[in-house]
Length: 112
Length: 114
Image (cartoon, rainbow over all chains, first blue to last red; front, side, top):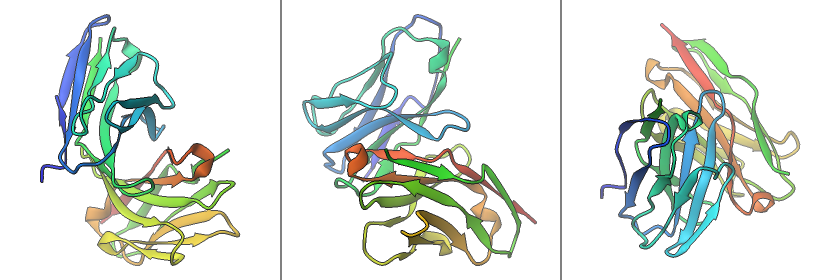
């Protein structure tokens, strides 16, 4: 099992550029989520999905879009990158409603 | 409203001495509580979780945590620190308050002195 796979691991963007962070899991988990991690702030939920075709906003959704066309994939799109989106992004899938999160290794994004 | 507070942003201990990382939560409903660990430049890994079974929960790498409802606490402990324990630790709470969304503490950085 690969678990949760995130790509790319590192990315540098210019302000206004768009990009997609890819996330795939092979554990057949229904629940997937995207977090951003900033120093001293823990993890903050951006968007989440409780199953294919269903997405919802988390704590900090502005500037990000998601879709969930399959159980396996949950990409995160930045439509017009801003320096405030410089962060480390983690994708996670969840085993059950209050179960364990399985994290990808993270994607470090820098917006100049 | 649900919240979680990690009382120390940094904890420094000597190798071989006990570790205590403090976490307090607030929740109107019975919570599920988790501790996650993040080693430098790595992803996050579950250490242990409490989901209304035994109040003393044992996790990986010799860590354990005790759920104390009267004190709304879920402190993480380890009897003897090892250099490999140096990492950042996150306390996480989930309950009906937040529709089972996970609420993360800001993290505690554990520093191990040789």
